Image (cartoon, rainbow over all chains, first blue to last red; front, side):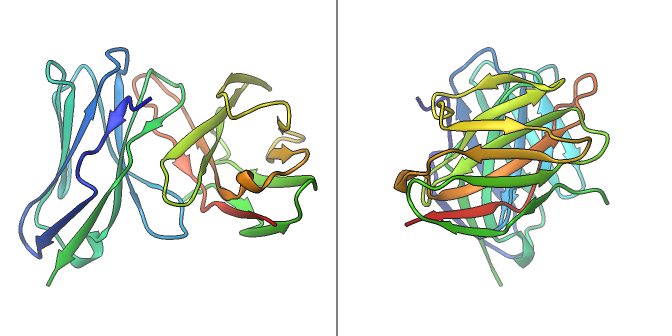
Amino acid sequence: DQQVKQNSPSLSVQEGRISILNCDYTNSMFDYFLWYKKYPAEGPTFLISISSIKDKNEDGRFTVFLNKSAKHLSLHIVPSQPGDSAVYFCAASEGAQKLVFGQGTRLTINP
Amino acid sequence: EPEVTQTPSHQVTQMGQEVILRCVPISNHLYFYWYRQILGQKVEFLVSFYNNEISEKSEIFDDQFSVERPDGSNFTLKIRSTKLEDSAMYFCASSETSQHTYEQYFGPGTRLTVT
């Protein structure tokens, strides 16, 4: 049951460039989408979210884009910094219900 | 900044033993959750809890699992008789849930090792 999919297990980006992480979903009932960052042996850290009534949300270096017709969202990080190296999880929910997570994308920022 | 805390950070137990994992959610949050992540796999939902009762549970959350909010601050997950396949990181999360914002904030996790 892969309702949320992150098709790229890993991504390598040069410091200062833009990182783009992608996520696809299949359940049209999802109305809230979130991105989490996770370091090994730690819990997921909330980064940014977007409601289905919007198509873009920005917070500092992080921007999330939502394309409802394509059931696709993406996270843009610009400029990328070495501290951004981590595993990024996309998650979706129907309101205040359980989060359904993607498999994660390991982002490596190279100096 | 308020945060979700979990204890212990690591629990080793023998198969068939009972374990209790503890969590202190963020104080003004109303919804509480348990998730787990088996090594190399996705983070999976176990159970959600609101207004002192379970609001949703997954297929994983069978009769061996229970949750409780014994006082105003703690939220616990009990596994009655652990199996080898229960070995995983267990994450507690909480959310405030105001209109249009459903962010869940996670604790650092408890690593459960069943031998």
